[in-house]
Amino acid sequence: MGGASGSGAGGLTGRAAGAGKRILVVDDDELTRFYLEGLLADLGYDVDCARSGEEALAALARFEAGQGQGYGVILLDRVMTGMSGMEVLARLAFLPGARHVPVIMVTGSNAPEEVREAIEAGVFYYLPKPVEAGLLASVVGAALRQAGQRARLTAGTEDDTGFRLATAAKFAYSSLAEAEKLAGFCANFFPDPERSIGGIAALMVNAVEHGICGIGFALKGELIRNGTLAEEIERRCAARAGGRPVEVTVVRRAADVALSVTDPGPGFDWREFMEFERVKPMMTHGRGIIEAKISGFDKLVFNEAGNQAIASVTTRSSIEW
Image 1 (cartoon, rainbow, N blue to C red):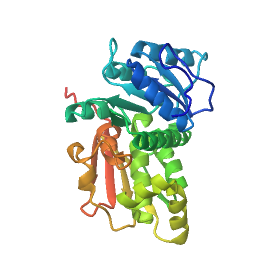
Image 2: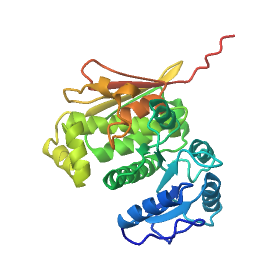
Image 3: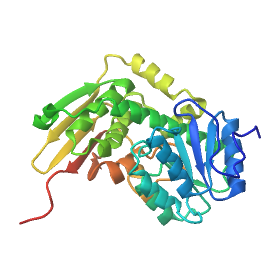
Image 4: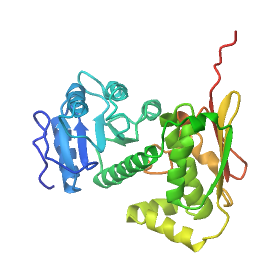
């Protein structure tokens, strides 16, 4: 185990790091902090450790005030003396600089109801103790990729009256870069762009990976492990240049905003990814659809084949006068 950035035993420790490469470990157990800190340091990350939820929030508040480091990922123990991990998670929603930082919850419990509660609250991944080094590396890498994607997506969201005046729009795209840019654009049609943007991106990126490139779940996992996913997607997109694109329609109706994403592929077995109980929370990929269903939209359905997704968010109040 390589040298970590601090002792992990007393207070917040660490050394300066580049944006997105600093990780905050929050755990009240000294041995766990030391172990995680060492693993992450060996992977090339700079690490800060906090002994409690209160200490972690204080560090994040200093960043909000422009006095501390921002974090690319937070590893958070669920059960701690004092403030629990779930309480810390709830507080993050009120810190603009930490609201969208991926949180990996580390816990000794793997009870289905606790996993569901954490994912519904916005946890990126549920990591069981004792933490396995290879899985930690994969999960942290996936979390940083998601954070980078979200930063690119939100760069395309702007408050513009034109989106509110439009009643419908149609688009076509054929690449991953176009999918990410279009997702940020389409989010503006929805009543809460920040809520829906991740789900929109998941559907649009899925249409490129599966519909255009023919990359299934198993192959995607292999490409992620090899670090060649983006390269393979680009290669396959280039090989079918001029082929049928993904078609997107956004419609603003009286009671909702609806998004339709139709890809040119044969489809996939979407049922495996639509029910929480059937989705393995320990996977490093493949959770985009269930997360979109849970948090991004009010309704998400697929056609029988699985090459068209229709998602909607209700805009009309359910109160009848």
